Amino acid sequence: MNILAISGSLRQQSLNTRLIVALQQRAAADCSIAMATLHDIPLYNGDDEERDGIPAAVSKLRERMVAADALILATPEYNAGMPGVLKNALDWLSRPPELMAPTFAHKPLALCGATPGGLGTTLAQAGSLQVLRQFKVQLYPEHLRVSSAHQQLDASGSPDQRLASALDRWLAGFIDFAGYSRS
Ligand code: FNR
Image 1 (cartoon, rainbow, N blue to C red):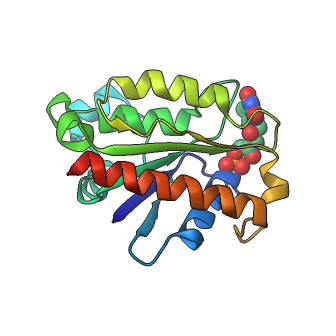
Image 2: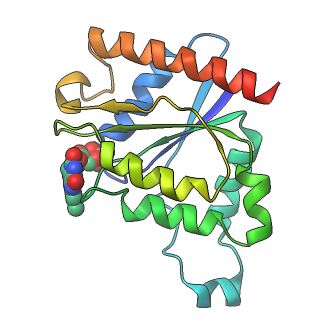
């Protein structure tokens, strides 16, 4: 299975990017997880869209999403919601409206998130669910929430033993779900 994981953080030392690296490390041989970041996605501006169309970086990300069997979104939590960079990318990806369904509809998608805090991005994920409802993805019902992530993921993204086991279980469940959803 070919999964594309999108990090919702631009930070070099991002815990959410590290969480994706940890998932890449734990992926079994029959599953590859590629990572996409949102560094090149400009701020949505309807004037720019009208003048220049969809930015190349958005189209490139869309192509990678369409080619993937399944998607993972790793969202930080900013003020109890998803960060603007992730919402901005989703807004671009919903344009033009006729490309929304080919990009997202029925695509297996899993949400995960990491925070140094104690509540594991619960509120960001609640907000993400509301947004993702518009996109009609096939949402994996188990959301991975990593609290105290700075203590569980080292600087290279390697998880400690307890998190590694949790990632293994979550990923295996998602792969089953995605395989079932697409069959
Ligand atoms: C945060 N952070 C945060 N954490 C949390 O658990 N709940 C929250 O509501 C917020 N709010 C928030 C707002 C803003 C503007 C910032 C910059 C940060 C802390 C956040 O979880 C922490 O910075 C993470 O490390 C961000 O994710 P990355 O960049 O490490 O992936």
